[in-house]
Image (tube, rainbow, N blue to C red; front, top):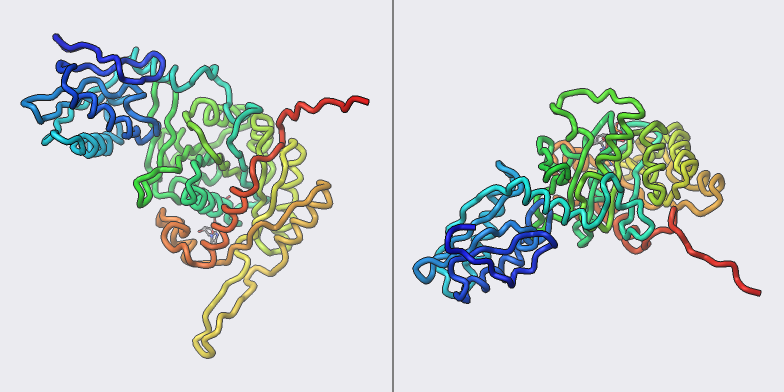
Length: 415
Ligand SMILES: Nc1ncnc2c1ncn2[C@@H]1O[C@H](COP(=O)(O)OP(=O)(O)OP(=O)(O)O)[C@@H](O)[C@H]1O
């Protein structure tokens, strides 16, 4: 503490987090500033900075100048400018405050450990929060039989569509061959920061309301260099996946989407073991050959006891407006019927209804959005492809939490 400072007892902090210091404890402006700072979230952890012990000191100088010291979790925190801006914007809303000086410091090792422990909230090391029977997060793995059918494009657009509808969404890119999710979301070079051994997933750019409802962790972010090739076999992959589920601070998520590698390999088996309550969406194109391999991905999911909740047919048709007659013409570029066929075959094989949840047209704008890191559901929500993906998001929100892998606590009925 700075000399002459006292701890003010009114700050409600997480267990173990220090209170705010001040040299002017009787000045009501200090408590008013603390109150408005309760509304400022750390952009990565997405909890109030006051709860996280990040507000070290608030002093009022010359009656109307606020001096605020903020502790960053790590030196060189990529979000420091956002924090500085948000804290200043909040503090100047307090009547009587005319200027704000922000000093940025860094948490000590002890403070970081206390923060990490608080965030874990009793969760033991290496425990996967989503695997707990009482987890409220809907975990959905996006699978495909083969590469290039648009699995990652569906994943990022679905994630954005869910976030746009107020859902808190995490995307775990477990596609060792592609890991294209960060680039498709415009955060290709972003690297997660960590608090002690806890990794903060990377938030995507805030939406127009300043919210970042979507955070990402990718297998590519565990590599030292972006251009490095991942050539991991089963056990290392399994550990990497465990790390991304257990050591990443995902916070309270409504949805966790997993972009799986194509096919039926090691990652699908690991996901099945680690997340028995995950549900699966199979992505296919309308092509016959693609449909046949997609069925295998669905069968694989059921072999590891995951429920297949539906099929998405991507690149379903191309809609072109005719320069001669002015009407819209549809072209079945990749054939037709593959999605429906996968849904019907899986329903028969698995013994429950597997629906065709969406048909997403072939759309050059969707491709361009992926290349530019600006998914089409955000930039052109009225396009038919965006509408199909937003419709898929709405179906998933309405669906409620599945019962796969959950303890039902059913008792035999008494006679
Ligand atoms: N509906 C669509 N319309 C037009 N282009 C699309 C559509 N869906 C995907 N694409 C494009 O097809 C290519 C492959 O898509 P994507 O990377 O999403 O497939 P994937 O199944 O995840 O492949 P992989 O598993 O090999 O990473 C990308 O260039 C993407 O922009």
